[in-house]
Image (cartoon, rainbow, N blue to C red; front, side, top):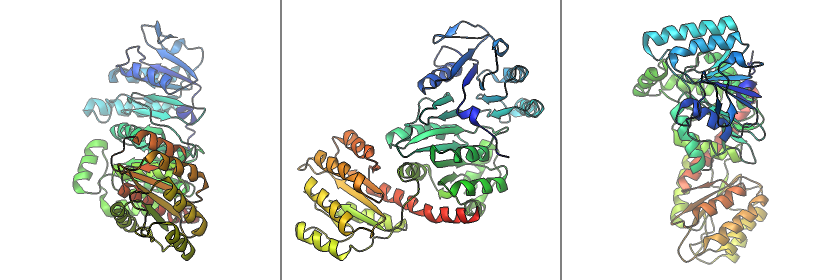
Length: 469
């Protein structure tokens, strides 16, 4: 049966065992991040010294609480954790996040601690996240929460939804948070699985995959404990939203490193491919592709068709984009006759009226806007996506071009992606304008085409997953 993980993502009250006011301590970081995330529930610091922390009265132990908190987060020394778990169980606390390590990964003493923790969980009917994890961040509108010592909050959702990242590496979670801001990725939910003494990848996938606020699920996997269950759950989720997986251990060197990191059993490429196929996963080969997928699906959660129009103001970038688009399986279909005729009548004679369209470097907002409007009117039904390329030469002010594209974006009935290249003095403002209009923007054309290729792979996976459901 699926576990109800609501207390870990939307608790009404959180007790922090090991809370501190020093922000550089784990307990201090968790308290700070609860507040920074915008959590509106009750925060209960627990520390033997008592007192107040960040203006919140602390309790000396969980036994001082009038009633059990929905969630207890444990951030104390490893040798004290089992006592804290026993106290939690004795005081009616049933949902725990254990952040520190010192268990199965920590030699004989850690293994003994791990076994005792497992026995406590079974005997007391506890539900436990971790140990040895970086925690959970979950930022849907109206129910924001974070119990983590990671340094920052991710960018959060956009108007079309948000990505969740379930990862067996806390460090990759940190990198994804940074990338969410640098690449404008709508990452709003993150789970660091840690040692997974009880809850694993599949449990989180099952719960988060069913949440309407989540538009795409990202996975970093080194091992899957129950592959049959994982396949069933992943197919069910993939029938409604993309499940994008970066699976480590595809080479002998990577498999050996994964075994040392999480104890993962060697898989090899053939076994990984079988898992990907049976689970209807959209597989990526590196973190860069995983983040591109999150960016693209964050705007277009149902993916795109394969027929693409490239609209550029520069020949070379158009060629590179065409090459990458073809390599990704996209089709650069011919322009419809009426569309080509209108463009030839209105563009300079040197412009390339083909796919890619080359508007020439001196194109201003009138030429960009006219071409996009003609594509929408005379090319209706011919294209599944439009890939815009905007190189910014010194003699053309890019701001009016960007404003024109952003104004037209709501009228574009197919997914619209955009890239800007060259010296970009107004990059932050230009990117923000387009992103606010629902147009994902990229630093280079190959990244844009790579993202579009990932988006185009999902519809077939979704259909296959739905047929299997």
